[in-house]
Image (tube, rainbow, N blue to C red; front, side):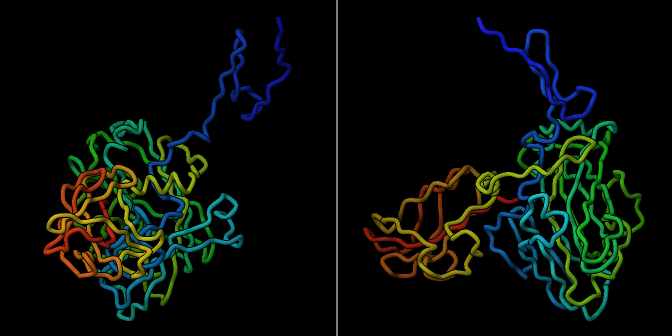
Length: 384
């Protein structure tokens, strides 16, 4: 009979012996607080997934997966890009971040109008909050939001969290004054509130907004860092206008993490494949990764299926099940024609039918050519 003798146990937590406990029966219990998986309720917080494309100037579109970019009242549209970080990005680079969501302002020559705004938005599913372990109706239970941010101008920026189920509530916050061209890590600890409601479903749960600028139509006098009932112009206190009125000002964000607890733990880095799979719950397409939908017209974005009878053709199975039965758009494989396919080399109107979370069963082709190849591209979206 052999005997295992343990002479010493390294205590990663310090001198108090709290990291590892050795029981009399020889079993060990480790207290691991910074490396637990599935802590981060945000998908693509490191801004590494760009199925929609890597740059856009279009309002109300997903500039990166899960991140919607919106603006209004602009004299010149902002440009939203997936930006590659380098070793000169002191702060996030050493923490393993290689991309940011980069916003470049246009030239807002008419100044800061009351209805002007630009914002980025992220929505967490209600069931992900309801099942997170956060006792959201208790003021003694917390969520912690953390992120890295850098601005080309020195000012503070606003943001908020909004609920959707039951009576809607808002939690407004500011980043604090940022130093020009310097990455800053912002951390906000958010207590629960007895009036919050999150349904256990796949609908809108918690909405995170970050605002480079909002005019006074959207803001007012609110108490920040506490929950209040959502009303018309209450996104937060009035914003500084410095960033908005400076031509080509920039703002970058990365490392966004939302987790249960009162402490911001190390960012939960996930593999590219893991993060891509999570994003595909909301968006999938036949386009080459990183190509904006409809932006590339070569045949490598398309595929062929064989039609039968009057020109109907078999559908496709999605790579993974989506949040809900998605909106499916078909396009010709060699061009940007929406709602069309190439049937026997001819342009024909077509639509996907029998759509479910796992795919669509048929392609219905108007006056299609039977028993020939059908060439098409497809896009499926079930975003919140």
